[in-house]
Structures are given as structure tokens and as C-alpha cells.
Picture 1 (spheres, rainbow, N blue to C red):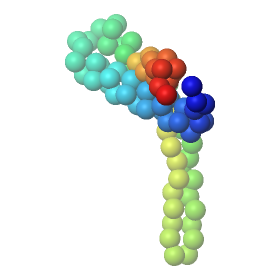
Picture 2 (cartoon, rainbow, N blue to C red):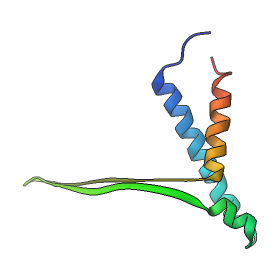
Picture 3 (cartoon, one colour):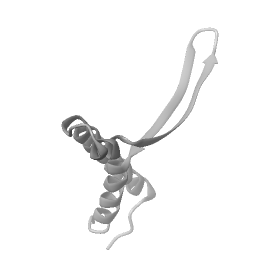
Picture 4 (cartoon, rainbow, N blue to C red):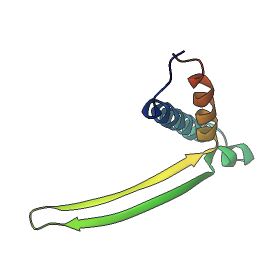
Length: 87
């Protein structure tokens, strides 16, 4: 078994988080109002920015928000488990 690069591992984990979060948002739209819907829609977020860089010719604004919900965490765990079996 060959060793996996750090970039590949980060890519797989991020893809797992994206897929899990997307599934959680879809479940939130499908499920009726109640405790289960609140469980899937509850999320934690962290953000940086916006930071503005004003050069005479161009103005750039940088920033990002990281938002993950319960199904995103489950997606990361499934991706980490699947990573063991990928060559």
C-alpha cells in the first residue's frame, strides 16, 4: 500500500464535508418542522474577513465563512473511513 499525500487526504475530507453538509441541507428542506429538522439544520460557523486590499488600479476583498452541520461531520467521518480503502 502506498502512502497518501497530505493534499489528497485534505481533499477527501473536504469533499466529505461538502457532501455531508449538502445532504443535511436537503434533509432540512424535506423534513417537517420539529426536533429532527432542528437537529439537521443546527450548524456551527466561523468566518474571517472581509479584508479589503485597495490598490490604485484594483480593489480586492477577501474573506470566507466555514459552516458545518451534523451531517457534514458524519460525511467527514465516512470520508476518513473510506480513505483507508482507497489506493
